[in-house]
Image 1 (cartoon, helix red, strand yellow):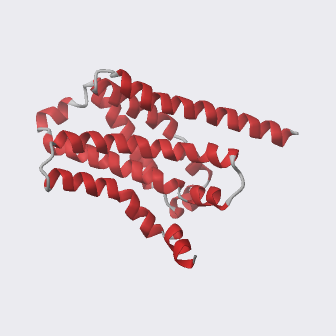
Image 2 (tube, rainbow, N blue to C red):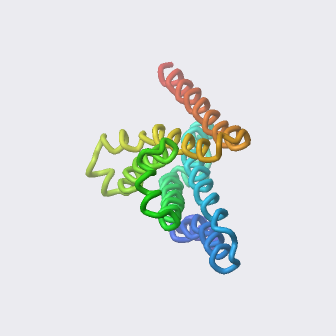
Length: 198
């Protein structure tokens, strides 16, 4: 039991698990010679998936308040968010490596890419302040900064949808998941407010 408790509570092991998909993608690209598009696609997709997981933590822990798993998940919410940024960074760095200077400069006037840059800029600000020092230093401002996720996520999704030519499957799966999460968060918050109000 002690070993299981250590495994579940090890921060380093948890970070290692979050890095496994990236390791697989790197090996697939540079060892197996997989097309670069696969690395590019899945680093972007995994970024969105990890952010969706981050956004789901609060509703889940408010609906299912009891249980040690609820506290365990809450403590790791920040890690999922930073992992989402890390995969977005890998996605962006790969694109920068493949694009020439002309394409990079043009990206700042291309609406599809501008959406991506704006979303990434917000994610960067959030990730850089996702630490205990920033929480203490920024005070109440920290929570406001972290709420920018509700701006960054739509920007990232719109960037993805536009880059793919608005494929229905992508919109239904990822856009639908985000919309459902937002509705659940509103309903859970409203229920919590009514309960506290008596």
